[in-house]
Image (tube, rainbow, N blue to C red; front, top):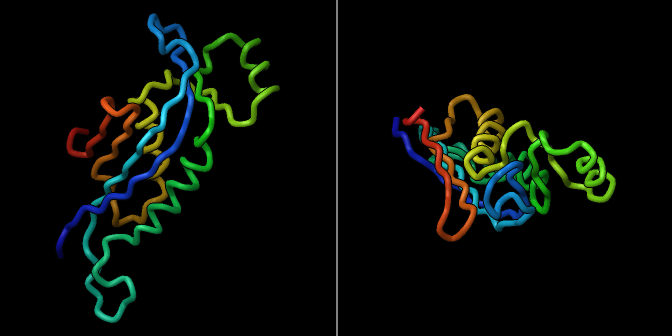
Length: 148
């Protein structure tokens, strides 16, 4: 059987701040993130099957990412749960889509969070080859299975 990589890309807008950071990213600010998922698997070799020749239907990847990442994180604010509890209460009272996460919401950590959410929903014969989260036009993080 032939192994092949398939990639699907997504765009979401999200704000974050880095708790305790010593630079401008300590302030709440937003990005238009570009997230891509590349999976690897065998091409279906089943003549007559409607998905013959596919590794995975792009719509399956889209459904997973849409549900696990886009619907949840698009137009949200992501903050470290270690921040001042009074601020957390005030934010929760005034805004709908706020995530307090147990990690610093850097591009790198967000990428790992997104990768884990996608991986748990893939069919058993499909694996993440790599993922990429681009935070700005010149900055991005990548995770490769071969590195781990």
